[in-house]
Image (cartoon, rainbow, N blue to C red; front, side):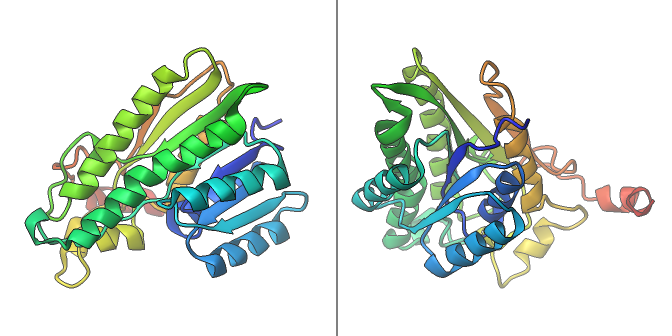
Length: 274
């Protein structure tokens, strides 16, 4: 029986892209879902799709801004009341604004919004899940999976990434420190670091209008959200005695954040066609 079957997973940033792909994969594994995002309409559509495709899977959702602690805390408490204890938290919500502007050219509101979503959001949701469910007096168990990025470890090669890169580095530090602080419990803390993913989110980061996105993807196939979802399921299906503490999943052509094999597709197009 898959490890996730029957478990309740709270997933943030669930309404589109990587989050929606993870939600679908979780449901296919038999997990019950609590989906968080700011978009009520998209959450409703995804929840209906999943319930229609996977009989017996329970799905609830909350339209909430993860950067609003009071709203997050109320939403988490209501999920526990409705669905029971949370077995897995996946912190996936993320935001990138202002690219390709360099840091001093960003709007201060963009800086504040990114910090609030990418840092406060991770901490607020984690804090509420721990205190409402995973680390209550009668229960000290669960898994926290933080979706970070390979940009947490290396500075990206294109402009407009100072805040986002700093946010991801902070997420990595938070993940590592939290893992230590939860020693003495049965709570695992894991990090999944995607590389280049072909989504609206990545197009937003590297630029819409000047060909930067197409140039950045030239010569290779980026990941798709389903690649990241498959990696998340792999990590979560490990037995509780095993922690895949951190996993990088990148296109094979992405040798690092500054080195890409632009001949990858040309060399492999015949192999891929077989």
